[in-house]
Amino acid sequence: MNQIRLVIFMTGLFLLSVTVYKWQAFTHFAWGIILFKALVPISFLMVCYGFGRLLRIPLILCLAIPILLESICWLYISHVMRVNQTAAVHRVGILEQWINYRDVIQFNGQFSNYSPDLGYTLRPRSEGYHADLEYKNKFKINSVGLRDDEESLQNPKIIFVGDSFTMGWGVDQDKTFAQLTEKQAGANSINAGISSYGTYREMLLFKKLQRDSCKLLVIQYCDNDLEENVARTEPNNQGQLLTSEKFRKVTVFNHLNEGYFPMRYAYFFLREKHLFKRIFTNPVEVWQDTFDAASSWISGKPLVDNAPPFIQSEAATIQHTENFFKVLAKIRLIYAGNIVVMHIAGRYTKPEMINAFEAKAKKEEDTKLYFLRNTDILTTNDYYPIDGHLNTKGHQKVANYLNKLIQEKNLLN
Image (cartoon, rainbow, N blue to C red; front, side, top):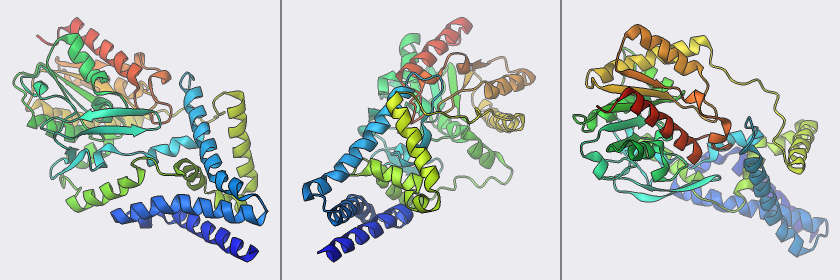
């Protein structure tokens, strides 16, 4: 009997190791995703049953161990979210890696469409919920693939372009700063933000919209716009490199992170910490990490983090600025009206970027170019601690600040 239990334990350990170290092998086909989501809980159950029965632990307790383990992992995640909501600095430890396990809306087949020139757009007239650890929000996409209603497409006075921050990742549709600004300003507006778009694709999308009624273009910049802006403004620009086949493969891969499957949270900690390997190669470090996490949990305080704050170097801000203004020059060829530029980064928005943009603008002498200094108003508490996007309060702050600028500068007349 013990031999059978040992075989079950070793088989479960092998299958669990495969899901941890060879998980990419499951992401090529839809059936592979189904197999993966079945193997994870089955392998946990086999390991707990086989090892527990070898130790003569009652059967009911062996079967309960995976449930207990998953519950502990979720309770720890809940603790991290709770204590960081009011912290001066987000310290989430290993959960910083959770962004690699999120359902990415632009590659979710329910919400996304392949586009030859834009890579992808939101799927026209799609509707449903996008959820993760810290939010669950309904998305309702209009006929041109934007998270807005049909009425906004007709004679808009304000057009918002940007990435997931503008689109409203993590907040309800009527709580985005685009929608809130529309209400406060009393001006028909289009929310043309699409997740992960850089400034270049935002410009291409802007070209497709009705612009003759537009009095104000709001451009939201994010640090990850740089790669796209550099690639698309170089002399040897190759255009859109995302093929339909690659898009299909990425949407299949994204199924791995869509929705909950049993033991998902325990699996995250196991894979992200490489516990199998580290228990044998560096057990002291494993113990220290476990002790630190437990101490944080017991004390009800965030993890201690001595890492220095990230600051954009001068060379980096120059690169961001030069490539952004190359795209801005292309926008000016099709639009001569007022433009407001804002910078929003994940978890924190620091002043280096907007300072560099403003300095460059002074040399350009564009009298219809304005800047919204979100760094003056946004704090850590305006972001989701784990996800890093703006929460509802953050969107409200940006809308209030933007509306104030619109009124002060009379930008809609």
